[in-house]
Image 1 (cartoon, helix red, strand yellow):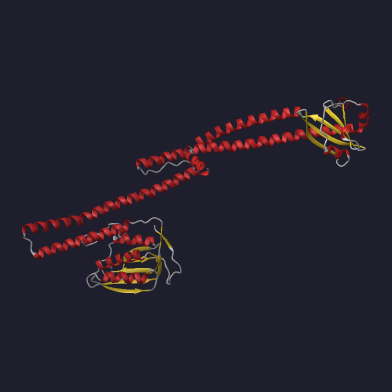
Image 2: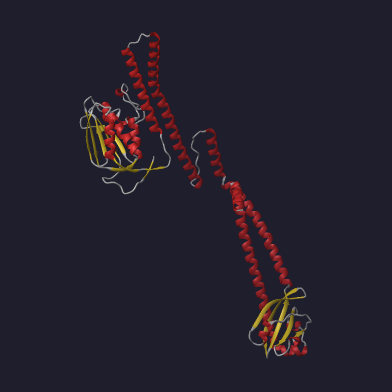
Length: 466
């Protein structure tokens, strides 16, 4: 049943829920006030009737013997609307006298207790001939009690009219509450409807334009958050489009060269006029182009990969990662490596860190002369890789970590222009930084720093990917 109610509740519009809740809340409040008012008036009316009857009874109790003997009518005591009953505790109930009336009232233990002197007075409601009466008893001395009973017909009529008025006011209040709730929902939720319409327009048209913001309430804060999300989405979309455009541009050159070489090989096979030396040269060029495309595609995949959420990572000893990267680069580079390192533990991804360090070493090996020396130092979490090449020009220095950026000197050399961008991405993902400058030998130098500690951390941590 609760599931059905929950489904119906959430299938209703927000405006209808506000209207219903407002109506129910005001209706409950009006009903509670009306009930409290009715109960208060009823209690005060009955209390006033009891006070009046007790006052009359105390005055009449002083003349009980005369009442009993002379049958003085009740109107002579100024109480024409009151029935008088004399109760004698020494006699049987059948001898209890009803003065100036033949009405039958059920005398009970409360009145007997007053006659016996156990209680000073009593007050209760009784029924006689289908009518409610309010009956009070006071002690008249000598084992007697004087009981006065007054009809509550007029009081009941007044209370019935009061209840009807309260009911009408309650119904009117609920109707007014429903109208007020509808007005509040219609006017108060207008900013929500505008925000909803704007979001639906963005979803339909794919235009990531900011939503106009009015005021500083919760809806305005929601619109601000949505605009921030739109800006982030627009920036991500721009980066994706730029990546696709740059990748297409970079892939065009090796694809063109590869197709040209393959056409030459096909034509040469058809004419059988290509020497073995030229054929081997063309095949080597094709292999180089394929390797360049493979490297470029791998770099693109690495750079475009964005895993949502958080990834659990392990403590990594950076010197071990550095040793593995140097061993890999040594096999394909004609340079020497001068390495000096001290232990440094970081909480991160070993594969990503190794890829970043490998890119730095490959870049240094590419720019160093044959037989040159690449200086590598790792001290307190800062890795410096310096080569003996020509260095970085001042105009190129601010752009070396941009995607696909290649200086004029590097355009004739193999590479995708993504290696240093991947290094910057890995550093940022691990909470570190990377910067470029001039090394001790006048060549280019890169400083790659990640937070950590000299000793192994006690527990694994969670690294939030940025």
